[in-house]
Image 1 (cartoon, rainbow, N blue to C red):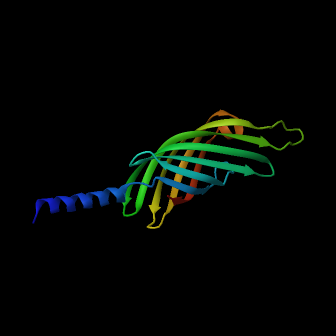
Image 2 (image 1 turned 30 degrees about the vertical axis):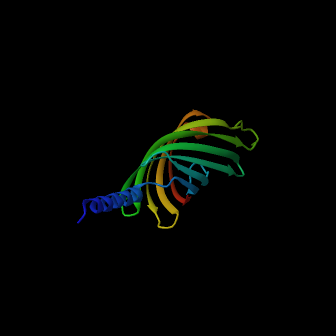
Image 3 (image 1 turned 90 degrees about the vertical axis):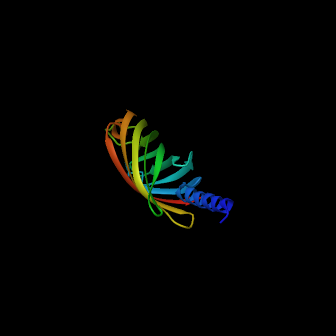
Length: 164
């Protein structure tokens, strides 16, 4: 057998295995959870390396008692688990704003808040450009409005994203 053919076959298989372990360049979708009543968030992920990505989520809420938005950003490390399963962890933070509806004899008017966040989760990468994830994101308020910044919040969510 010719050495150049063996080398070409080895290189081809190495490229295939490297491609199978890399993460998608972009993913866009929804993160469906419940953190401080925000519920659904628009979620975008951008690969910044072979095993690293940035995730940005925007949640908003228009309810009877208050109107609010929350913008979070996380840097994530992604590791292969088994087959099409990956697990990931990350760190980040964000900011938001809440505006409470006026209530007689109550001076709650809302304001800006800033928080820190961690992230750990598992995801399944389908053979079609669909990515499903389940993650746990603890958040702690750092600065701002008391009802949204002085607490420690556990956010668990299901992510559904289109990869491109």
